[in-house]
Image (tube, rainbow, N blue to C red; front, side, top):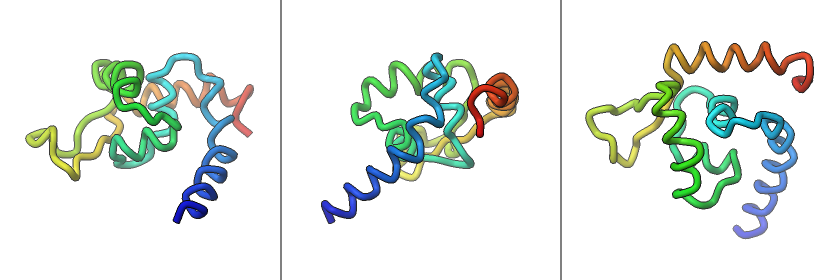
Length: 107
């Protein structure tokens, strides 16, 4: 199991390290990587952020406050199966980022 987790981490590192690090605004990094509906844990794993407090303060809360993401279960904010998805504003901002960075960083 440990070996499998290490292989996943190595694959994750090589797949994602350069895919968002060029974005300086931390909430925009979250926006860049989110696809469909994702849990906080999934997002943190992709961003390689092990500490929930850091994630919440620097990535999640600002993104949520900018109304770029929304809960899939808004009536149950602390629910175990809670996931998050882009709002219409989040999709617009993500598309703007794609245009901004497409010629420089997207292969």
